[in-house]
Every structure is written in C-alpha cells, then in structure tokens.
Length: 220
Image (cartoon, rainbow, N blue to C red; front, top):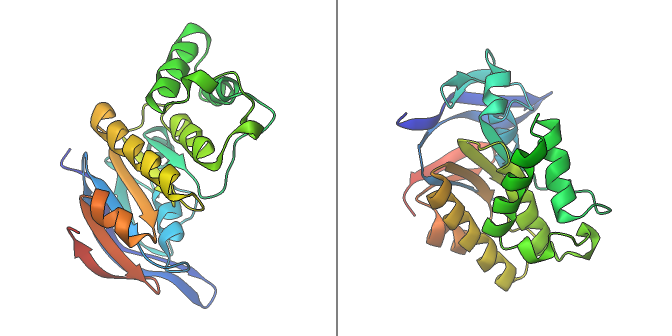
C-alpha cells in the first residue's frame, strides 16, 4: 500500500465553529508525517476523525485502506494511538499496564507477556518493568504509552503531541525511540506538534496547519 492515509476535504464543525476546514493530504506508508501548528489549529480534531473518535462533518478519509465512516472497526484494529492526556494507571506497574491493555484486545498468556517484554525493552523501560507508574518521570510515562500503543502491532501509530511538557533531554530520548520504532516495526507514524525544531529535524514530511486549514505541506 503506497499510502497509509488519504484525506479528502475533511471537515469538522462544532456548531458555528469550523475546527477543521476541508483539509486534504496523504501520508505515505512508512514515513514520519508531522502535523505542525499552534494550539487550537485543529490538529487533535483531525487525528480524532482519522482514528474514528469524531465523525467528519463532511469529506472522507481512508486509513489503511478502510473508510473511517464505513469501516470504523477495521480502522481501529489497524492503528495504535497515544493521546495528549495521560491514560496510564498510576497504581499499576509498567508491565501490569501493558498486560491489562493486552487483555482488553484479546491477548493473553505467554503471548502477551512476551510482547510486553519486547516493547519495554524497545522503549528502554525493561529495568523499571516492576515499578509503579506513579514513580515514573514524564518522559518515562510517555515511552510507556508509546509501548502500549504498539501492543496491537499497528500499521499506523498516531502520536498527539508526544513530547508536550517534557524537558529537552526527555524530548530527545522520545524522538530517538520514535525513529527506532518506525524503522524496526516498519510502521507509519502520524504525529501532531507545535515544536518546529523537532519536526524539522525528524519528520519526513510536514503539514503546517492554522485556524483549521493546511497552509503548506511538503518536506521540512
């Protein structure tokens, strides 16, 4: 599949507010695609339409070959998502968070334990596997959320502001892991950000969004 995502005139309104205004773009399979813009530009709303959490007011989107309106379940089965807000359970360990998520997706037994181990190693958290999440730094929590997003072996990983609120050292480590994961897992990565420097350095292509519209799109 040449393109993992194809959006055509995708729009979303909330009453009189037009949050996303007829955006069109495509994301090639295997690339790191960045959606860059200030807060309130419509980045998260676009992601929510692509992952079927929000129904487009108009327009269409094809994700992994599935229409977000006609085949939402197929879309969800083929993607992983890391949201802006933390959704980990602070009272569980890193391993327990992953195993709980795996169980919700029907993965159990040795298969889920082996997968959890490989993802904790990939994200550099294996040594903290038995530590409760409440003891984790912001960067460690973000890496664990990325590991959780990869549990279902997605073809696309959506990352909504993956480095928000992190210090420069943690941001650098997160990006190192994002690049490593994209290459090792051979998956497409779609992320939102308002950090121009990190997008310029790490993304293959960038769409610049403001006031619900794509103003420019291309390589950094």
